[in-house]
Structures are given as structure tokens and as C-alpha cells.
Image (cartoon, rainbow, N blue to C red; front, side):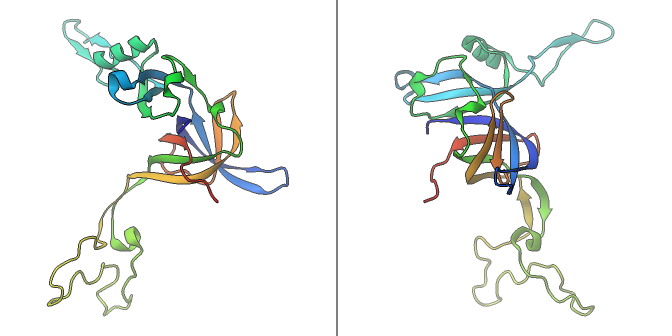
Length: 227
């Protein structure tokens, strides 16, 4: 892998090509990311680049109305992470991820990675946490068929038989059953970069990208291009 970037999902829209055809695209706020650590074979046993994305406030200590009791805002960056970012000479970041670049040794601390590392026509893989659907039945979760909808049926949206009485006398592993749906890591491969706005660090990717709006999306060059 030679290039990758962290982004947040802005939403979907549509654009028109030069030939007038309509293209549905997902808008991604890609970067700017900064290099927070460069891992080497000598120190870490492998080569990789750690990058940070999106600003995050540091923890602050305030006093209550009486002025006697202090309390700490827990949503900020703790001392350990603050020291890590200070060592790299960058501000605190909300997201920190690691990429095993082939040219990891060429990166330096504090170096910026922007959307212009990609170009129009590039193929990328997008990874994000999909939208959570909560607890769902087998019909919505796996597309199973429903039963008759007549009054006497008493079997409308049940999942059906789990295991016969005498054979196999048990429920097979992997049986589609009601349960938690969504909120899992999903990767969509071979998405085409339709447009790059280097000034605003925006990537327009053809088609849908997993996750809700404002979700963290990892964009990498594709591992298997279309033949």
C-alpha cells in the first residue's frame, strides 16, 4: 500500500460528467492528516506510519461555583496522549490510525497528508462502521420469507423452524436468527474517485460509502482492481 487517508463522511449528492451523464457520489472530508509517529524495524519490528485526524481539545480543570472543588472534563486528551502528540510536534487529534506504507521511511513527524494524494480515476477501498439497525427479526436481517398473512395462520413474521424434532435434533451453527443488526466494520472495494477538491480537501467517490454522516472513513488504494 502506497497511499491512504482518514476522512469523515459529509453525505451524498450527484454530479454530471462532461457527456451529461449523472453520477451519484459520496462527499468525503479527507484530511488533512498529520504524521504522529513513524515506526521502524529497529524500534518496532516493522515499518508503518501513524497518522492523526480531526482536532480534539485537551482536558481542562475547572472549579465549581464555590471555588473549592476542582473537576476535570473527561472528554479531552489525557496526559499520555498529550505527551505523544507533543513529541511529534502536532496538536491533539481525535482519531489515530496506522498504515503500513511501502515507503514508510520517507515520512517525517508532523508531515501533512492531504486529499491530493489521490487523483481522478483512482480506485479506492472505503472502510467504516455501518449504520446500526438495533435488534431486528430474521426477515429484515437475513431476508427470510414470511408466513401466510391470513387470520388463522398465527405465523406471519416468525423465523420458521430452527431444527427438526428427530433429525438433526439441534440447531445448526450459523442459523439465521433475530439479533443485533448493523454497526459492524464494512469495506466497499473498487470505488472510483470522480473528483478531487484539493483546496477544500474533499474527495467525491462514485457510489455509496458505509456509515452515517460524520462517520470516520478509511480510504486506501484498492487491493484488487477490476480486470
